[in-house]
Image (cartoon, rainbow, N blue to C red):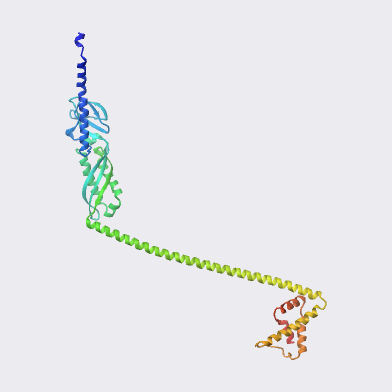
Length: 367
């Protein structure tokens, strides 16, 4: 009985190869499907006619999700790794890729709010976030996304002017992305970003835009040139102003210094005169016969002054008794009698510089 149940090694190896054959076939089938899908433009959704067969033991690749139906009804979503299916009952109905996909949006004609026709195309980046909704929520997700992107872009462009479209491309991309995501919530797809690739206005519009740009550049050049001239004139005026201010300050400083010097000179001269007067007055009072000598000196200067006045062509008013020389001398001596020592010293000091006829002398002469 036990001998009859014994199995030869060759028979065991054959049984193992036969049991593993479905797994090997499934792995090769998955590799062929993935490579053929990548060669056909890298589409995210596998062809329904090339779906993996149910070989009981299946290996789901990374970043893929397989939708399994049992007897025509959704059963589960196979995640990456090893999965075991029921033969004849389970069927792999959809294969979804969870990678980010770049989808080209064909060029289309759009009309701006200022009635300018534009040809625009773009690139859409999306990812499947819910394999169940992506399989049962829409028949052809790629086609639906492309159509939705085109209609959304046409609607957004219709609300903007040409200048705004060219200037606010980033804002336009974000608006299109938000609008597509709001409409594709039930499809299990999330649009990551949308990029406008080309904006092609009509030829006449491009020519007008070039003319506007050229005129604007010329205007900026003229403005910059005028601003340069204005700034140059301002700088020259400021330089002249600074020069005049510095000159006036220098002249003012010069006059102040001169006035200070003159004042100092007058003060020094006054001090010197005062010291000289004091010295002469002291000498007159302390020297015997000093007053008589000074009286004689004053009389001599008195006569000398009249002699100097007579040399010049001047009109003079003289006393009537000038012909009496003795009285003239007595008048000169009388001046001395009315002076004290300091006044006398001052008179002597002044007579040494230039001829002086004081008001006191005139009064004595008139007498």
